[in-house]
Amino acid sequence: MITIGAIVLLTLVILRVSSNLLATDNVMGNSKVGLMATSLATSIMEEAMSKKFDENTTSGNVTSPSNLTTVANLGRDTGEEYPFFDDFDDFNFFRSNPRIDSIDIADNKYLVFKTFCRVDYINEATPLINSASPTWHKRLSIKITGDAMRDETIGRQDTLRMSTIFSYWYFR
Image (cartoon, rainbow, N blue to C red):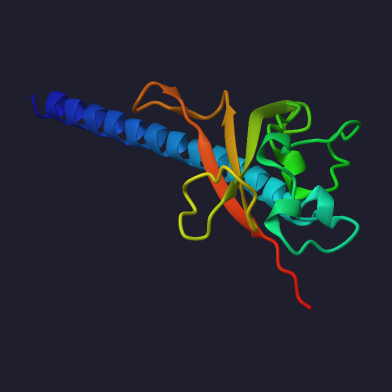
């Protein structure tokens, strides 16, 4: 009787340890995917911020927000294709090519991310609200999703959202 009780107790302990290991492995996998998605979003932000503020500032200085690209014209100009953008707002409505945003994790297995970018003018007093006219500040919002980004607690695909603000400064 004691032997049977010991075997049952050992079985319960082994099952508990196994379930904890599986849960830990799942959390670690999700953390790796989240870190890769964050790294991808940060790379896009840094690339966008390395460009000129506006199409009208690529060849000179602008002294009035009214001389900047209109809200309706934010985005790529004719003939501009990624990765040859020349200004920050070229990233407006940019959707990445999944082949570019694939990360080789091992043995030719890839994590494929889908990226969507949006650029809006904002006011410095209300940075969360889009401006209907050009200002000295633009916000780049990035959404990244992928098949590996699943939140099992809610049973659907998860989305990483990041944003940054880029401002134009003119010194005389």
